[in-house]
Length: 329
Image (cartoon, rainbow, N blue to C red; front, side, top):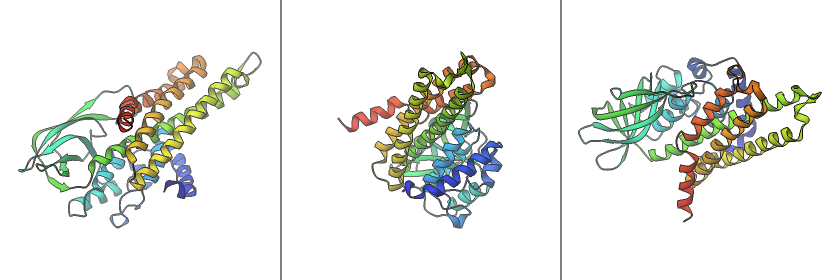
């Protein structure tokens, strides 16, 4: 379970924070070994699990880093890991790990016909623009899960207020594909995608709490730090509580994903709460920074835009709560 490797994760978190503090492009992330965390060791990866990937996702959110890590590593590797070893799958995983291939996973409603033609559409696909290979989760003519490798799909960039993310609409209308690989439970990738985004939101919310506390300790008003005022203390305490609850829910969801036990419920709880709470925390951080919090130079707007987009990406809080409500009806 994730909780068994606390010391390892703390070390990984510290290294990631140090790397990202200096700025990190895709080449740096590959050199650090993060792209291949879940790639088997025999293919050049680390052979780690989602718990380690979650640490990196959290630190990327904390730094509000603009990288193709979500689509190019987290989802693409997870999708390929649903496929058995083959002459098609293994070079793709090895290429992702060493940085020679930048792939992305396309999770949507796609079907592939008996003669190998793909039809379907997916919106808000992370990091699809500029990807070398598109890996599509689909179903075949018999309804079985497959992973389709294709290059000739239509990729249309979608504009966002969040400039740290890149998403696109991916469509196929009877497109001939390069390979169709039998897969196992590709639908479970939706949980990993949602949880990765929740981890990102936790990181950015904690970054905003730290920045707000620091500001409250140094900004003075009426001859004393504003952090000494009861209203500011209570606001910061509320932010801490939200982050603590989000971390606890995310930890439970990671354990559920790793153990493959009732992950749907745990992920829905983590995604709905953590991403909603992050928007509240960043909004409160902007308010507590006063006038400077609303300026372009403060940088808080970057976190607010990212938190707002995270809230809707791979399921809004309302959508995930509907899942929970249906479960308990």
